[in-house]
Length: 99
View 1 (tube, rainbow, N blue to C red):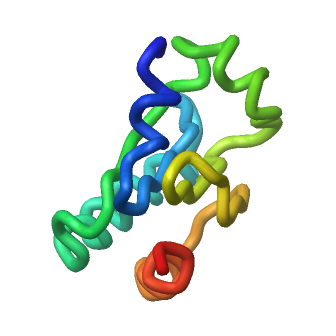
View 2 (cartoon, rainbow, N blue to C red):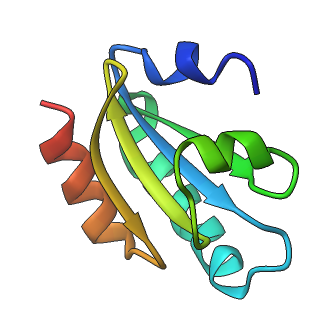
């Protein structure tokens, strides 16, 4: 994913989801991310990155477990967490992190 830097350098919040097809908790996150996008609309970009297809990117960002979620604002990482995160928690983090 050569345009990753370009993607995270947007003015709006960018939530990156490092996931794997075989990962159960990742499957749990998918509908949660959709609900977050539906709730926040254009205020956030959500990017899903398959760690098996983007191993060098996952290594660069030291993704050791999936799902790993990262929030970027203007290219700067403002939050990171591994594991499932609830819709309400994510919305709060995005709203607080994107100020």
